[in-house]
Length: 414
Image 1 (cartoon, helix red, strand yellow):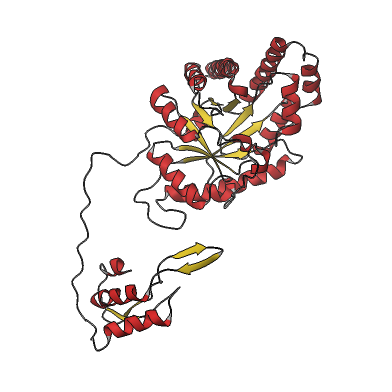
Image 2: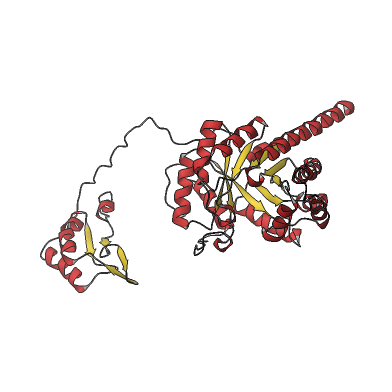
């Protein structure tokens, strides 16, 4: 409080007052208590007077002894009417410049052309060779970004911002970092955002996150200080240069914010209302849960065609009948048609053909999606990046075919 008062003039038509706590509270054995003693108040009394304070009292944790110390130390002393303001310290210049975005946000890319992004989960163990092999192969396949989940299914993995920074600096590929509300309170979320921005990781996906009880860490608790709506709002306020508590961050943030959209529900219309709410909170574009039918693609297109916000349609290649049944029955937000489940079941004794059938199903869905949406989002199963490399190349070939066809139509028209 004294430090703050050092930069405040004594007002001409009002009096300064100060009511300090008896220290910050300490929590011990289930109770809050304050450790600041009366002698410390006594030693601070003259400093308050020297800053022009005319009314001195106490707030949380103060006792009659604290107030008596103030009164005894200042007895017979007259208030001051003039003071010299303390000069503010001059900032030290350093070579490091504030983080500034130079690339084009993904939502802008998806508005201008077809775009392919791929999810490659951070490893559960400390070995990262396969992850970076996959990242390099996917870069060569021509994707725009790799998305990095945040402890998906509530199971701990290598921290995604660490992998994202290494991927950006060593592989030269844009990371899209997922942020869940489950694992961090508001303090942790704010700190995490500041860290991501400092590392130059500006593309984020704001999601609620699967409950901790879904994962493999018994006793872990979910935080959920905020919902995905409030997290989006929090990031957008960060872009205005303000923390969630309204404090000045010193510069404006540069984040572009993706939000999740689950079309695998009974009422897509209700899911779209939820989308529209996220747009109001500041979502720049959407990424969907995996879709496994052309009918669902058409339904989503019809329900969202009034929106100008880009949508990346999610696909995850099936690898086996067991994988198919697990996704359908165990993973929240994913439903697979009985026809596909029967097809994969008929190939359950042939793992190679099962994987090829999964690729074929996904390619057919990509053909349909590319006619309706600019964004394709591929999810890599079990770090088997060779599957999403093939699909990424196919998606880019598909978008090139569509572009050439449009050019031919324009040529004929002209």
